[in-house]
Amino acid sequence: MAKQLLLVRHGKSDWGNLDLKDFDRPLNKRGKENAPEMAERLVQRGFKFDLIVSSPAKRAKSTAKFFAEAYQVNDIQYEESIYEANTTALLKVINGLDDSSDTVIMFGHNPGFTDLANELSDADIYNIPTAGMVLMSFPFDSWKMVSRGTGELVFFDYPKNSDEI
Image 1: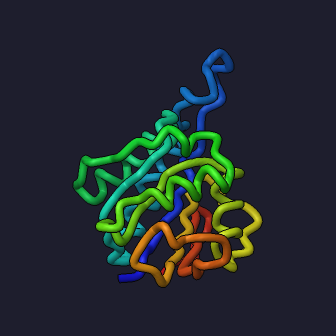
Image 2: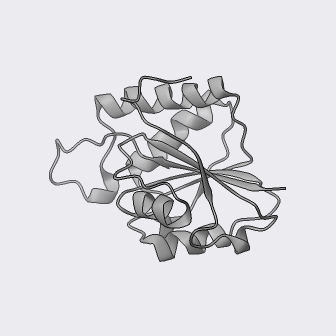
């Protein structure tokens, strides 16, 4: 069974309180609107998944929760190494995913996610905007096989992309 990885960048975050650590920044109003809207688009597409993995940073966590709610699941796996991760660290997380999950949604951050999408597939994406989603598929039974250039871009969607299906 081929593997599918959906990368979702967290929603727009709130910079109102400059005393907050980056890790603790919440979503702002737009982030709280965009995340459920994008989750709804996924549901409309008939998209199904086996696992949600997220950075434990507050804005990523909140975004993941909106998607979990839309799908009425409450199991989110938090993976510390996704926060502030570069492509090497992110690939390590992907290679370590359980092979019983064929489709995984991963919530995290830029620039790592944009770099990762471009490195794993022929995506050629300049920037994944906040609450943007990139779906890639890999022709493998095992996540361990995923490496540079082995993925295929299935779709790239983001809140301002209005020509949705």
